[in-house]
Amino acid sequence: MDEQQRTTQEYLGKVADRFDYVLNPDEKARGRIIQYMTENKIKYGKYYCPCKQHYPVDETKDPVCPCPSFKDEIDTNGFCECHIFFNSDAAVAARRSAGLLSTVTCPG
Image 1 (tube, rainbow, N blue to C red):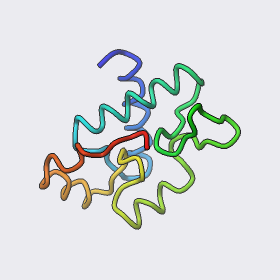
Image 2 (cartoon, one colour):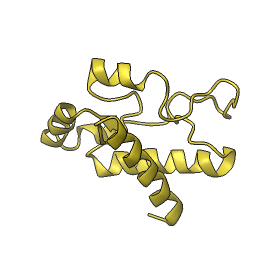
Image 3 (cartoon, one colour):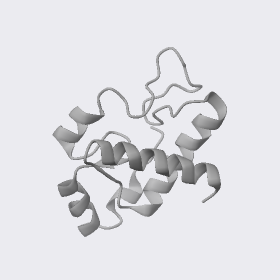
Image 4 (cartoon, helix red, strand yellow):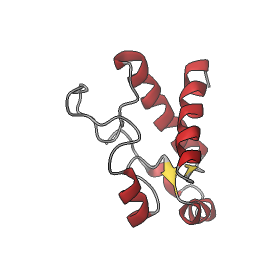
């Protein structure tokens, strides 16, 4: 992981801590999401939500992470649409079914 990706992970960790969430326990899936977000930060200057963005990014419409609906998504599903933020119960379940989240393809 390069320095810019570490910075993105630190940012996401702070967001998770602020809302009492955890980051995706699947290291491979988490790494892909961090890579996409890092690319957005480098190219556009913001952490655009990789799973809800247009291609190319529409800076007037695309949400910045954390997106406005991420808390509702976590309340409903246990994780946000991008699968970066999880509540603790969903994270435990994801750890138990290791490999399941590695099939997540983001951006989507």
